[in-house]
Image 1 (cartoon, helix red, strand yellow):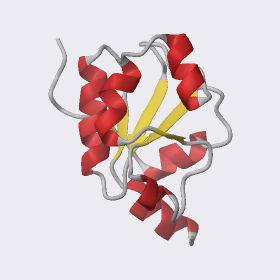
Image 2 (cartoon, helix red, strand yellow; image 1 turned 60 degrees about the vertical axis):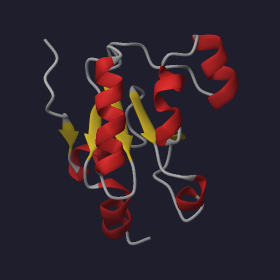
Image 3 (cartoon, one colour; image 1 turned 120 degrees about the vertical axis):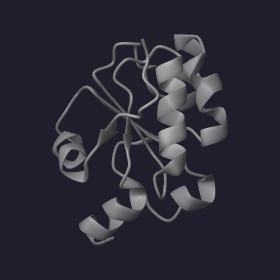
Image 4 (cartoon, helix red, strand yellow; image 1 turned 45 degrees about the vertical axis):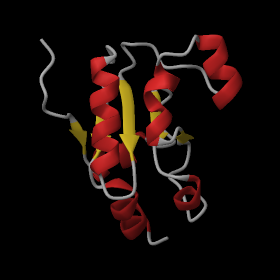
Length: 119
């Protein structure tokens, strides 16, 4: 049923969602050090090595830890990203295996975002 091909989202599509969509759940899987250099507005920081644990938490525990409501399995706009694209893909695969049907990787990652945004 689940394909091994990671679903991806383009810069243009993500840009259209950031700040405009109530449904966007954007997960930044980079390290704290990378995050300190800049981030995509509205993203939630869940480092790559904790993604699986985070997505299997009880909703109350997730909210207490991350300050946001845990996305449901059918979240329409669940997007992961890292610095270059690889870890975002890994996180997207993990989410898909856990049953998140619409998980996508922003393959351009923060590198492309920061270049396009001029930050």
